[in-house]
Every structure is written in structure tokens, then in C-alpha cells.
Length: 161
Image (cartoon, rainbow, N blue to C red):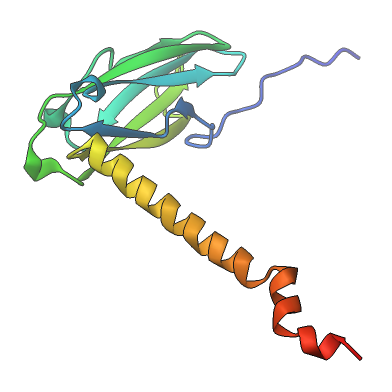
């Protein structure tokens, strides 16, 4: 008896959505970061349609906020921050990418991407360097405290008979 191979029924909202990067960081003092690209991947055997939603659409311009992705292809979505003001520093906005089958209405999957505006790329790098230096200093202190030679010096008299 010949069985017909059927595509499994997809449950609404459970389809994994593959987007990179998973976070967008915009820097007020670096205009080159005001425009960024999200890449949506479709590893599936069927075409997907997508829609990009945002918690604060007045702060961003999304080029091609809806479209389609062919099977085993990807599409780039350009997002531009258009409201760079100090009152927005540190505020986390969210983009939601919803995907569905080309011929269906219901969303099969979704993924959220956080976007944040920071005042300065330089400040962020300095803060990161400071954390790294502190970590290295702590590691170096830990290594020096527990080196075999330091035990030998401290207990040298006890080892001799």
C-alpha cells in the first residue's frame, strides 16, 4: 500500500524564527550605527512571509517591514533610528518579527529583537575595558595568591627535617 507523504501540521506560534543579530545597539554619537540590518533566515522547505512590528514605531524607519523569504534563503531588513535624543538613552524598544506560511494568515512563529540607544560608543568601550581590567586584576591576584612557590616560601621551615 502506498502512503502519501504529508507535511506535518504546523502549530500556531511554535515555529522557530532565526534572526541575527538578536539585539540592536544604536549610539547617539556614531551616526554609522543609526542604520542597522536585521537578517531573517528561512531554513525551511517552504516559503515564509514576514511582518516587522515595533513597540515605538515613531522612533524607527523599517524598510520593507513586510515581505517574503524563499525556502532556504534569507532577507535583510534595514532599520533606521530616526529620533536620536538624550531622553531616549537606555530605553529598550522591541521589534517583533512574525512569520507565517506564504498562503496562510496565522502567525507560525515570532521573535523579539531588543533595540537600545546609548549616548556614546566611546563610553561603552571604556566601561567594557574597565570591567576587563578589573577581571584581569582579580584573576592575577588569585593566581599569585595560590602559586605553589608562594606556599613554599610561607611554609619553607616546616618542610625541612
